Length: 343
Image 1 (tube, rainbow, N blue to C red):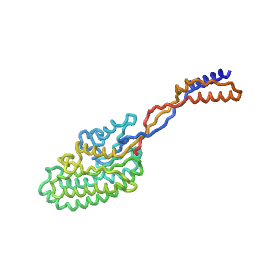
Image 2: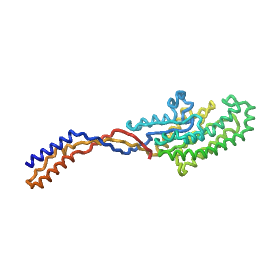
Image 3: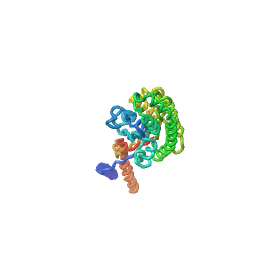
Image 4: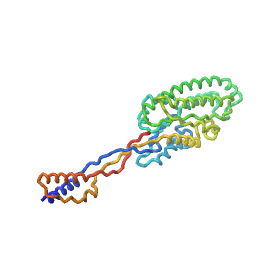
């Protein structure tokens, strides 16, 4: 009698497990990555790719260093993780302009979601002043300067120095505010680029290139000095040294354009890639936990019961029910990636 009862109860439990649907549960786990799944680029026309072939179609149409990194990282990360580049750099952007945009809150969502933020800023704080100085004197191409022009320009270089010093002081104030704001809004890795000197071989105006070199070096030193400041910690990608003695090779200064050419963007991309990979990143993988029955447990023979009292029989019944119910175990299938975060 008891043996029949055990058989009936076991069959009933298995039947119920087979016909009653059980909702799949989910769990998450962190997966390490060498590159950031979400990259945010901020700054000026150096970061947009201005002057490159295809730029007339927009930032996405040229081989800027941002797009070089995009191609590299999107092919490296798992398909289920993916890669996202958000390039919010703007041609002509100054440190004051970037700080204003940050304070407006328009970049908050992008900052929150970023694993890594790369910034090129400060160039226009100086280069606008340098370029405006030349343009005001009528020098817009290598052939536009005359002997008379040069004599007049040399006499006014002192005013240029004063303007550049004023802009450098403002840049330092803006830099601390920019990096402080960003680090308060994101857990992503923040990388600041130094500025290369495009005027190294610019010889049209005596003394001009030495002034540019001095002021650009001071701007870069400002970026380096504040990298470890409390509350605004960032990593420096030192672009400037790689351009020393190579400004003609890596920029468009041959036509009085300070922007990097295609080769210059490749150099910057390699430098940034090394800096980016110095930190480990991660993404959160979500996977499903589905109910399943193990073959070993479902096929295990029931123990031969001994003749027991009615109380003992009841105990055996509950034991069988427990064993049958415990036959459901979890099987795991990895499926979706929903979020990632730099470590």
